Amino acid sequence: MSELLVDFITSLDGHASGEGWPGFWGLEGPEYLAWLGEQPEATYLMGANTYRLMSGFAAGEVPSGQDEFRPEEEASVDDLTQASKVVFSSSLEEPLTWANCTLVRDDAVEAVRAMKSSDSGLLSTIGSLSLCRSLLLAGLVDRFRVVMFPVITGATGEERIYDRYPDVALEMIEHRTFDGRIQLVEYKPRVLEHPPLGVPA
Image 1 (cartoon, rainbow, N blue to C red):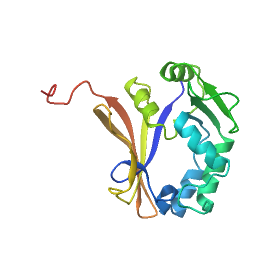
Image 2: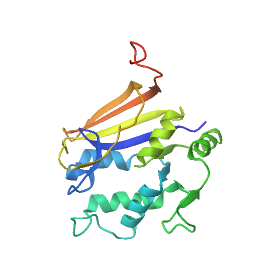
Image 3: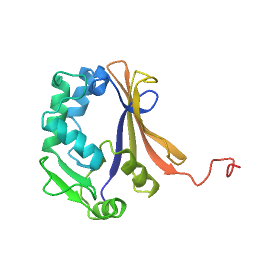
């Protein structure tokens, strides 16, 4: 049985990105980058919006407000280009232009369930907030990992990660600090039918 990892990088207040901020909020350090380079091979799962964004970066489109990619951002995109990727979408057309991508039009939950059963190796999400939420609700997520960067993007934050999430109990299985400022927390998630004190009124 394959393992499914939901993987987020966030500001402290739970935004996936922020207007006017570079990748990693410009706060990545050597320990964190070294850890990224040590990650096991995985098949990355994403939806159409994340595909459009990331494939654009791979094609050389620079984020708004930047003149060029920083070396750390370019290396991250290059690594993703080399990896196996599955894109769930009913709106994209084949052939996909980003290398090593497979387009799946079937229901994402059922497709991922089948991928897990067929022992497809490690599966990891990238971005794709609604896809992650659907997989969590379906009980398919084995690990939930968040790397929090030391910034609050209250004025400029975009993509609030946990909106419309269910209540989820989290059992911590890993934690680590990189470069004295970046915090990793990793959990086994369990979706709750109701909070501990009963169904809210």
